[in-house]
Image 1 (cartoon, rainbow, N blue to C red):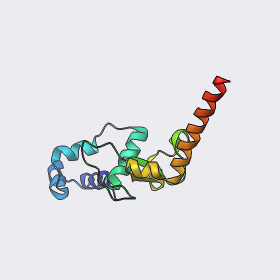
Image 2 (cartoon, rainbow, N blue to C red; image 1 turned 180 degrees about the vertical axis):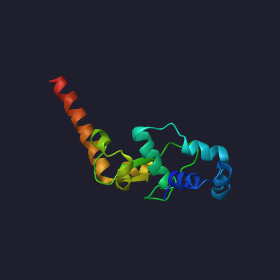
Image 3 (cartoon, helix red, strand yellow; image 1 turned 90 degrees about the horizontal axis):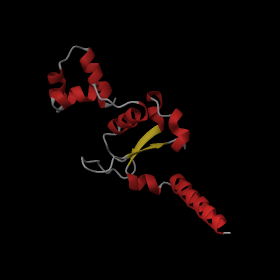
Image 4 (cartoon, helix red, strand yellow; image 1 turned 30 degrees about the vertical axis):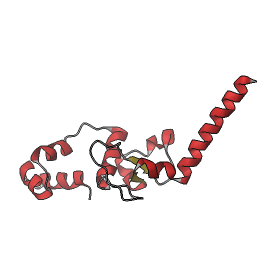
Length: 130
């Protein structure tokens, strides 16, 4: 169960923000922020995946720290980019994992897509010269 779900459950049982904070080892203000965050759509889904994975890369185990680049969220079913928008819903969290940028870029399917993009850009430039 991710942090957001646990806090929501505790709040629904009548616990105060301060009591929830004591149980989880965070401030009552942070409890309030987690429950009332302003993220919507893809951003909310991706942040929930990061929270579920405890801000840890699921490939190398690197822990995200404040000030670092946000970790990427990878689609296990192969959909990404424009095709992924229909998958970025709360009910599809099982198809998503948290990866640091280095691990995400080193995945075979991501590398192939990057190379394909570079090749098509190069072909466009060559055709423009002819």
